[in-house]
Every structure is written in C-alpha cells, then in structure tokens.
Length: 323
Image (cartoon, rainbow, N blue to C red):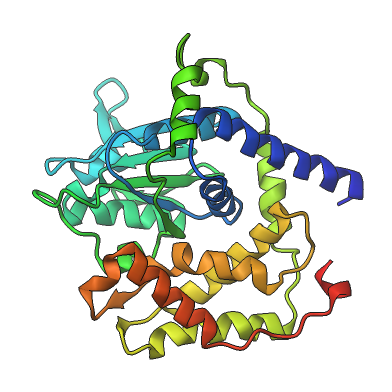
C-alpha cells in the first residue's frame, strides 16, 4: 500500500468522524470508540436511555459509508426467523426459496436487544460470531462489511431477558453516549430548526476504502513489551478482589486490536500505552462479573479501572519508536 493511498484512507476516516459529529452531539471520544469498533470488524452495544440518538447514529454511519442498514425492533414475540429469514415454497417451481431477513445488511440496528427471548438472541449470536446464518440446514454468508449496533435501556428491566455472558462477550465494545452537555444540546436544536442533519448528510467513504482501512489495522505493530502490558492489564481484572469473573483471552485480543485501530485514528504506526488505557472500560467492562453491585456506579467504576491501570507497570517506550 503506497504512502499516498494511506494518506487518502486516513483523510477519509477523518471526514467520516466529522460527518458523524454533524449529526450526533456527543463526546468526541464516543465517536472514536465507534470508529475503532468499525475498523476492527466488531459489534457495538449501546447502553443508553431512550432518545439519545442511537438510531440516528446507526443511520448516519450507514449513510456516510453508502452501506445498507436495517432496523430490528426486538420484542418478546420476535422469532429467530424474523432475524435470519425464512424459506418460502414456490408452487410454480416446486421448491423452496430462501427470503433473507434483516440480518442480511451491512449495518444492523438491534433496538432493545434484551427484550428478545434467549432463543432469538442466540440466532443473532451466530451472525455476530461467524458472519453466517444457518437456515434449513444451509449456511448463508452475510455481507462484508457487517456490523451490529445493539441497544438496551440500563434503567428499565421489566419484561427483559438479560444478555448472557457468552452473548455479551461477542460485543467488541459497550459504550454509553450519555446526555449532551448544554453547548451540544443547543447546537443540536439549532441544527434541526430547518430539518434533520441526516437529510443533508453526504457519503464520505466507499465500501472499498472501509475494507482497506480494516486491513490496515492488522499492519499496526506492537512490540513484545506492549503485548505483555496488554496481557497484564487483562490478567489484573481476573485477580482483582472485587471481580468474580475476569476478562477472557477474547478480551485480550479485542483490546490489542482496538489499540491498533486507535493508533490509526491518531495517525501513528505503532501502539503505545496511551492508546490502550482509554480502551480498558469500553472493551472489557461488559466481559466482567463484579462481586459488588456498587461497581455499577460511575464513580466506583472509574476508581476500579484506575486501580487496574496502577497495578501494572508501564513499559519503557522510546520516543523514536512511539512516532
């Protein structure tokens, strides 16, 4: 890949971030986390109250990338076939034809995923894990790229089915957009006086550019000291006295890939510790089971992650290598 091509791809990535910020008023770090998940071919769990822009975010992402998006409203009566698709009998041809479900899209918004039954949730698990769907003993390949944006309300639990650990572990990250601050909310209101910003949103990246950026992530280098640093941070979650179940090796791999993507977003070719630390909570928190319910509180959670960071020595990283 030539240097010019790399610069073009990084420029397209920057334009994508700017495009999303025109539509969604949230902290810039949240948009970075979304893009990191996208570059790592991951799936994102958005845990927020209603009305904070989760659906708008999914639409803005698909529109900016010229990708197909489908929205799935999860309810207790939703069947697995409502996600994957069904086989319909053609009386003229005397055979069944498979009718693809909404999962056959590039961006799938699974709204209120915890309102779907465990059986239906598991139908989504294969798609997220394997990029395929099995129906009537046949396996169908999903489009590439493919990303699931799933939402759940962290406040309302009545009539819900909590996602099991195996399902949570399939999400690359879990984030919360949160409420906008006063300046962001005023900007949102001003922007929507004469229509929705989505109506004017232009595509800024092609599918080919996205796939090339995803391939770039694998070329970002980590030395052994950085790999060991990531491993020790993850292992610290398993050994902490307030954790009943620590992060799995899948969490280690996700953290390493996320750090590579964060380096690309920052215009760097190598991973350094400052790219890893901000990723700990969004990449690992949903993979942990805590002993103390108090760790669900933001202040206690922040202190927990500071303890994890402080427990691991930062490796020496020469400035020449860091550039």
